[in-house]
Length: 376
Image (cartoon, rainbow, N blue to C red):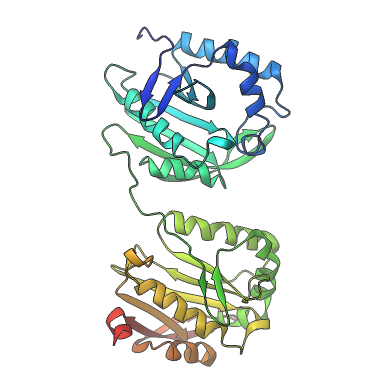
């Protein structure tokens, strides 16, 4: 074994040093934060005795056994504790990295810098000489996932019930970083900007949109044309759908918007740019509209907003795509009119390609639009 003793790591405006007895009160204070309580496995309520046991037992034993190395993320000027970061290893060439940060220190990329500093040490020959780092977080902890993404971790998937948090098992994301990989994002994290028109606003989905999604997706017209929708469409399905819209952006697969009326309120539609990794320089548009908003020009304006965003240059906040495709099944005249009003041109028919409600199989009519078409 290496002769590992608590030591400091220093980086750009960053100091990592093991927690000590004088930090106990500060740790106890920070662990009252609702976000730390929500996303970590710290006891709740968190007491002074918990902080004392953490510093005097958990941290000390971890360094002595060389299995759990914990550093406090500190302000280099006054050594004030701003968070925690640690490596947990069982001697198989891999370790798990974990971290949390005080509320007042968030938004300054402190954790990203700390993760890179610890990873450099973990992979170095003078350190543990690890080959793999693992990261996991409860599904929904987007702040932690952004740190892992920024530091080059590759998402491996989701583990159902991957973590036990105070007696409740929660699903977890899992990602890895290997020695020698650049510690920078391996794919974009797509923005979901708010796009405003005169009749509709495209914005992120909110949890509060679930009831409207349920109403729209149980509507007979929606159910008829979108044969793949579950029936009945439940609130749990809607909540999963809303959560998965964020996943699509984080994985650079697509951008999904809720359509809302300019005066606000719940979603009146869903509008998506999909398949951004499978279409070279292009994407596919899909949408549905809540029955309360049909016939009001919502879909036509929303598709136009998406088109302009898709073709706008990245320097102007857009996606810089060159081609968009969209389709409707035979008989869906409302969708056909929206597509043609947006300037899309027919380019082919995919025979017997889509199954609508009731098992009826229909042709798909495909259209496309090029960025050059929009400029002309």
